[in-house]
Every structure is written in structure tokens, then in C-alpha cells.
Image (cartoon, rainbow, N blue to C red; front, side, top):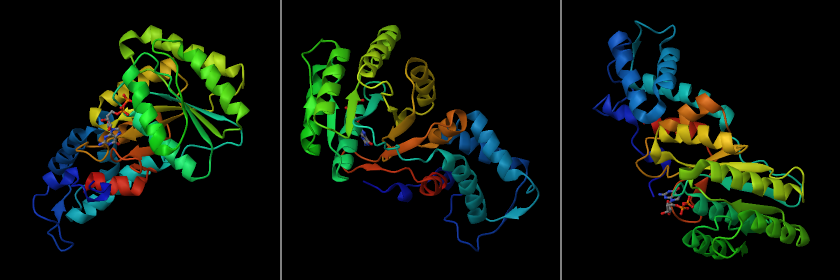
Length: 298
Ligand code: GDP
């Protein structure tokens, strides 16, 4: 996989030739600002965020002559400034088990992310249990079992079509009895029937709270970065049906323009706990705002 920092950023399209520090300077005028705004919008940042980033960059600098590297530095700085407050790893608590509810639409990378996280926590010496709470998709359960094996973490399952809340309760009982540090609960991602999903998630929460009134301690929303602006509406929806505490952005290794992360940070301010950068078990990285900003600007 191509490391994030080596992906060509969107500014490459504005400045066709490779930019050397000695490259000629351009006057930051209205036309230049407009091109910048356009590129920022195209990077999936969304109109509001793009205009704000461009305005911040332009403030006090209109009419100045700037070289391409200078503009890139300024832009990367603006992006990093928006991203820094949301770059936070998932908090770990002493509570046993710390319950992590994982939500997101099907295909966003929930299963993969649970596997990667389980592997990381296990490597850090934590005892982890996974509950395959998407009991309606047999394939999802099987897939999670494969990831559990890879990560060396037990996966609790229930018969197809059975009540996910009852599985969550059993998993909680097992995790408590075994003194597990973390219980990660996968959930269904059928947004087609939002009411059902909402009730299902609410029931899982209600049931695990019988065992620990503070659970779940984290509700992670997994978002596919390649869905662009769609990710924004997914946050909107999931915040209505679950108490989302943090995000994991997947598929940032692909051709994702990634600008949607800036829009998400700007609009919701939810912590970004980690980013998925590939399909393998180690392809989950902490979110680094500086590196991200550099990669985005190119
Ligand atoms: P779920 O339906 O939300 O559980 O999604 P899955 O975990 O099954 O992932 C859906 C697809 O996305 C699979 O083919 C994964 O291999 C792939 N995937 C998940 N995370 C990443 C990532 O960070 N990068 C890439 N390239 N693919 C990913």
C-alpha cells in the first residue's frame, strides 16, 4: 500500500509543474483564491469548510506574492489546525470490560476495523472479547470469526436471526466472568430500516447497562472515506440513533480524496480515533493531522 504521505495531493492539479522552492511567485488575487476554493471543494471538503479554509488562508495575504510551496504550507497549516483537536486515540478505561459498540453502514469496514482493533489491543496485552452482533447476516458473522482468529481473540456468535441484544448480554456476562479488558460489539448496518436499527441498538444498550450502567463506554462509528460527502449524512443519521463518541475512517489508502475528514472535523468535531489504510490486520493507524494535511495538499 502506498503510504498516505506519498499520495499525490489535490494541489498537484492546480500547479502542473513540480514546485521547487525557487519557483516563481504568484500574486494571491481573487482568481487565484477562486481556483483554490474550487480545488478544496473538489477534495470533498464541502463548500462551507472549503470557503472557510480559503478565507483563512487569504486573510491578510491578498495581493501578496506567494510561491507554490508557500501556498501549500499555508494550506496544510490551515487543514492541520482544523484536524488537530479531533486527532485523539480511543480512550482506554480501567473498567472491566470496557464496552465498545461499533456502528456503521454495511460495507463501511466495521468487521475489518474490529479485527484490526482487537489485534492492536491484544498486542498491547489486553484481553479482548468480540460479539458478532450483526446476527442477520451470516456472512458478516463468518467474516468476523475469521478476523477473530487472525487477531487471536474469541468471537461470540448467536444463531442467524437471533436477538443481538441477547447475544450482547451473554457476551457481557462472559467478558465479566473472564475478566476481559475489552468487549467489542459489532452491530447491524441496515440503514434501509432506520427505525428497526434504532430499536435494535437501543435494546443492546439497555441490556448491557443491566450489567454496567456506564456501558457502552465508547460508540465508534466506522465511516468509509471513499463515500465522500455521504459520510456527513451518515454521521447525522447515526448520531440520532446512537450516542456516537468517536470515528474510525476507513479506506484512506485508496483514491479517497480524504477532504471529507476536514468537513467532518469542522462540522461535528467528533474525535477521529484511527484510520484504515488497507485490508490487512496491521493497516490501522492513529490519525496524524500533520501527515494527513500534507498528504491532502500534496
Ligand atoms: P462491514 O460490512 O462494515 O463489516 O465491512 P467490512 O469490514 O466487511 O469491509 C468491507 C470491505 O472494505 C472489505 O472488502 C474490506 O477488506 C474493505 N476494507 C475495510 N477497511 C479497509 C481499509 O482501510 N482500506 C481498504 N482498502 N479496504 C478496506
